[in-house]
Amino acid sequence: MASPTVAANAYANLARILDSGGAGKSTDSSGPSFAALLKDAVGSVMEAGRKSDAQTMAMANGKANVMDVVTAVAETDVAVSTLVSVRDRVIQSYEDVMKMTI
Image (cartoon, rainbow, N blue to C red; front, side, top):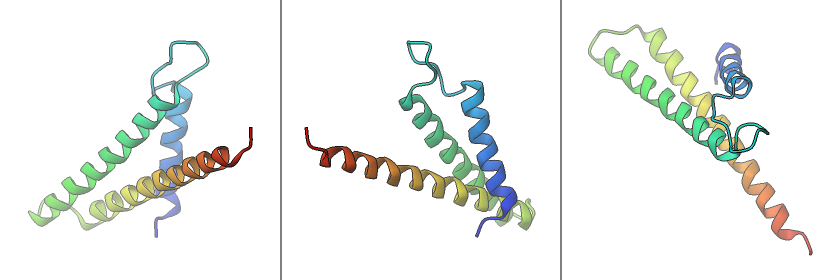
């Protein structure tokens, strides 16, 4: 189970991305496109996984602290769980739209 601090950091990172427009702007001025937000979200999950892997390898070589590894793994867990939740909601929304009568 992830600690509240890890969850708060994950949500703060998401808020920072959304507020700064770091996901890239679409051609109109309405804000970042969904595709750009999705690409950044997947990229941040991949980056968390790479960090976790690097910390694990460093610990195996005796160069890292156990707490750093646990923290990196917990952050990756929160990022993957969040991504899976978003995926499930997108699929559910798609299915709801497909059930609508025209």
